Figure 1: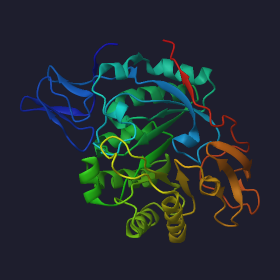
Figure 2 (figure 1 turned 30 degrees about the vertical axis):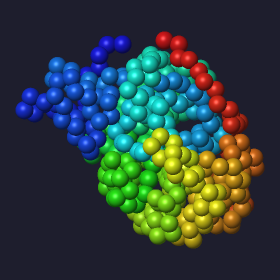
Figure 3 (figure 1 turned 90 degrees about the vertical axis):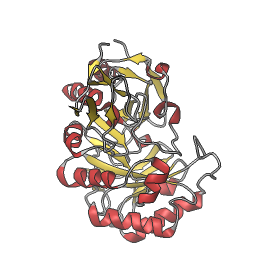
Length: 354
C-alpha cells in the first residue's frame, strides 16, 4: 500500500511534532516516535502500519473483555505493531514491542476487513492486541467501512490519547474496554513509562460526553497494585466519577516480558478484589484470565439472580429480556439481545481476501 500521511501533527522549527498521544514526540527527519510506527518522512508524519496487520482472528466478545456488549457474539479482532506505552508487564509484547516488519506483514484495506467481518457473520470488529490509538487513522477508516455494513466497532485501549485526537477516534467506536492499570501515578511512571491523568481524562470523556459503551480492565500485579488501599481507591474513583454501572474486570497477571520474576496473581486475590468492588457499590464486577464461574457471571444488582452464566467464554443460563432482568424487571446496563449469541469459546484465525 502507498505511504500514508498521518493526521494529528504539526511542523515546528524544522521538526515534526506528533499530537496523537500525550508524549508529543518531536521527530527529526527519519526519526520514529516512541510507538515506533509513526515516522517523520520528508517532514511529514507517516503512519507506517496503515493497511497492515499482525493477524486476524475471530474471538468471543467476552475475550476483549466485554460482558455487556452483545454477549456470546463473534468479533473479528486485529492489531498492528508497536505501542505508545512501555509496560514492563506487557502480555502481548511480541506484537506491541515489535520492531520487525514481519509483524505487520498481512495487508488488509479497511473495506476488505469490513467485508470479511460481514462474510463471517461477526457482530463487531475489534481493534486490539496492541493499542489502536497508535493506528488511529487506520482504525477510523476501518470503523467507517464497518458501519456502512452494519458492523459494530470495539476499541481495546489504554486510553492514552490527546484531547484533540480523542473526539474523532471515539466518534467511530461503539464500545471500548479501557485498561486502567492502577490509580497511582508512580505505578504509571515506573511500570508503563506514561502518566495516569490522560487515562482518567479519557474515561471521564467517554462516560460523560459519548454514547460509547464502556467497560474497564484492571490487571492485578502482586506487590504492585494488589493492596486493599489500591483496590478501594480504584473503586472509589470509578464510583465517584463514572458511576456504579460501568463493568469492571479484574484480571490475573502472569509473568512476562520484563517482569518474569513476579509471581502470577493468586485466584484468591481476584476474589478479594471483586468483593471489595462490590462492597464499594459497583454493580457489575468480574474476574478474568482464570476459570471462575461465580466471578465471571452477571448478577442482577437488585435481586441478585444470575442473569448471564459464564464458564470461561462459554455462556449458559441467560435471563435478560428487553434489556431487563427477567426476575425483577430491573434494567441492566449494556447492549443485549433477547437471545445470547452462540459463538462460544472458539478462536478462529482468518485471512483477509483483498
